[in-house]
Length: 387
Image (cartoon, rainbow, N blue to C red; front, side):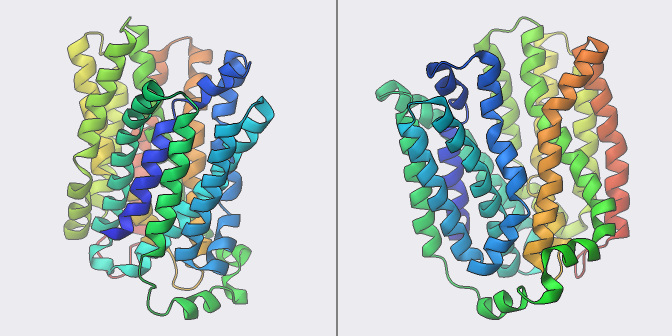
């Protein structure tokens, strides 16, 4: 269980500051549009850091790569705490991204190596659940800290959480054969370009299915509050609807992992994506508060039961030699989907002038993506476990 400590602590810290970056930018004189752009700098930094993260992980090893990422994160959280100008805040927010790339890659690789394939889904679903719990607690902690001190104090709190995560990681045991694996992963046949080319079919099939799944998940996070606002809900009512969805989401991560280990990856991958798609389609007809809550529950169900799914599929498909390099490409595809989600909503609403049409369109994309994801899993069956 100690392996989940760093993820939980880091998620609490970043959950505390997630709603505050835009407010910090506004306080420093940014416009609303510029503030929204600044909040997206972290995602851009993460995209740019996904592939180089494999270099850090192979040179330092998974354990010390996590430590380095946490300390890097803490430094730039401190910069954000001290930032007295927009350029400094922009630099700090952008640099959160590469730290997230290294941290995410190394923690996934560490747990993949540490556990048997027979319990891999439960282990990685629990990792996804730890992130969700931390992300739920973080904003509550941030609200208390702002009320007790001020907005900037939340960045100091997040920096302390990252330092604590580094300390917990140092206490984790070294994995047997870690040195031999590090030397193996620096061989010519484990170089990033070689690994990406050797597994292009996996990325083209299973990877694109995961991209659609990631896009659908990020759409859910954005479109539900927008739909509530379009119906005239107050900010408090919108928050409550989102909290209901998150509560369902957080409660199902272990169930999803158990199903994947017992019955196979398909039994979670396809149904969870279908449920998300149906929820997005159904949202267009949810014009009563009770219906909105029902759809929020459906979206939380679809997302929650699939907690850790992207990591599980990536770990299943990753080779023994060049695992970090493969997972860096895998995370890049997932992060592209996460980043595209809000832009997809914006583009569809601009073209159709209707949030409902955009929701239905993206729901249909998710339903089609579930079929492609199922095909990708069957085309690339995980060794040693059920597809």
